[in-house]
Image 1 (cartoon, helix red, strand yellow):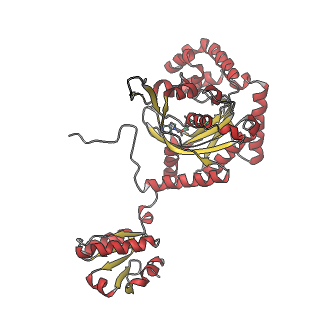
Image 2: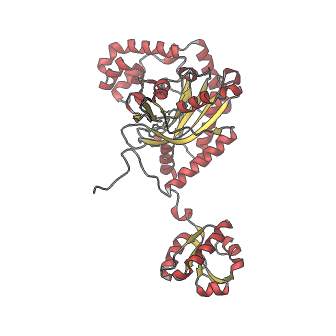
Length: 434
Ligand code: HAM
């Protein structure tokens, strides 16, 4: 039989790497709490229609990368339903916002999520088919201040703080405004017209995009095409007055808070729901897939999926890429340090196994970390296993059971002592060597 492996583009995360994942998630939860965000958990799969309407039918994500299936009808009278593994979480959050009438509270909703997303992309370093995002959305009725540029700046300031607290150094915040839907449509046509004379000199992908989706030409990385792309019209020149003022207020607030950014005229993002502010944080250490996170404002998204007016802004951070960046900076956590248990209980003979479990239970319920050996092990094997995992070994044989006096060895000093069972927990709680 061929050996079964994790499916291409998916992977197993094992200790000690998962220590790093947990540290990042805990840091994110802590930072989000300081900014008054609450957690939302939406389903892993949704009606396909949701992503078509929000992310956009013509985008790469929806047209090529979704895991979609027809869900069987339960009764003959019922229709099948097209379902899709979520390729991103903003659509699900806005659907939940509408479904639970969160707008009726009149309050700004500040929601964060941590979880897997699925896209059928070509796997490479930093790009997977199941990947993990930490994201957040700020959304509410206009009366809640959800349209204010202050919200954009606050989200960006929070991200800078989060990356700093995680110890990520050398990130760059790229910032742009894509204006209103009308501005974008106008820009799209300006770009299409400007590409007609120059496209024949560009790469094959650009020649195709010039016709099908001109905005995507701005993502091209082919060196020879760069001077041509730099000479194309910029979206900044297609923005209406309101969008210009909005963007100016975002940058003024960032300047006041001391958050550095660079204006990137080519940052139009690959999802259709964006309006006004768009951004990405990149990191040089990541190679081709250098976006650590991306996001922006989506003022018309709620209405596009049948909800009330509810402007919003949010981001999603690629957890896999964050881990890669931290590993490159500081390596994986030390597995020995991770597993310094308080004690290893070594039963001498299988007849004391049950008593050893009872002792382990007592100590663990008292808050100690305890690894439990097995009475079938030779004493040498128990000592080796204990030395690898714990600060102290506790020997439990028939004699110890009878007398209630246990033998404990501290590996850091090599000293062996006898302790009454009643004093065992207190001894094990002490740091090694004391
Ligand atoms: P996105 O730019 O498609 O935006 O994804 C955000 C981040 O997820 C990327 O910057 C990247 O770090 C990570 N990512 C995306 N695809 C992959 C992949 N195949 N493998 C590994 N990491 C990946 C969104 O998803 C929007 N929902 C963000 C947002 C929230 N906008 C407003 N609110």
